[in-house]
Image 1 (cartoon, rainbow, N blue to C red):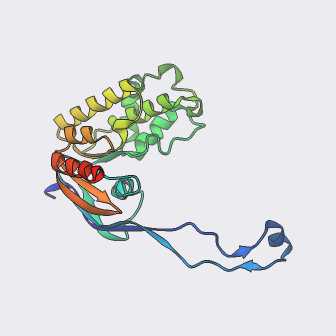
Image 2 (image 1 turned 180 degrees about the vertical axis):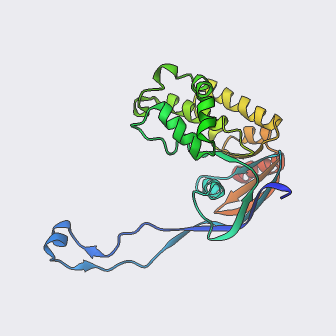
Image 3 (image 1 turned 180 degrees about the horizontal axis):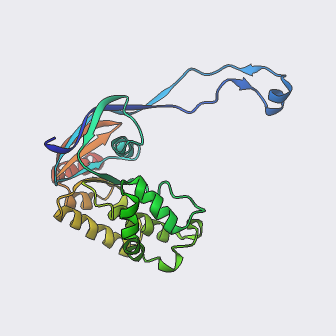
Length: 249
């Protein structure tokens, strides 16, 4: 495959939450009394419509757009958390994502146990994780807490551990969702350093962020999503400036 990542004419919709048919009260449910409520008709939210993008090997591309435009849904489709209703997604090599830091952590497991499980979810073998465990722990700077349950961790400790695991996966394709705008200044510097390292090593990266200056700094090509559709795409500088002009108007 000439490109590291290809998203072709992808669409995704979700069923809207609704109250199903049932009794009007909990009491009437158990007593078998009362009138059953009629079920409202099915309704759906169209999250993405006919979205396509390609990211050549070794390039850094970006996705921008307002909240609710479909950015995170797109990344979750790429990772396989969701399945597209239409279209196809292909990528080459090992894929790692920082969509939700610590997604899948169990609060009652220790940091070490969660590092092992989360690393395997991200594609590492058990041996790879064990070989890198000391490095991951040192990178996260939580040595004295690593064998405590993660429910006792502060938000900063939780993020550092999740980030340390993800960056030691050595992916071929890396997805980043708002990672540039979370955490303290030291955490942000670590993020920037790792992105520079990945770029130097030829890792293909797709970044979703509201930090437009960071998008311009790192990305060569950007797509702008609006209402689940591609409104604009092109060079990072051109798309970001057009996006800013849209809101200035």
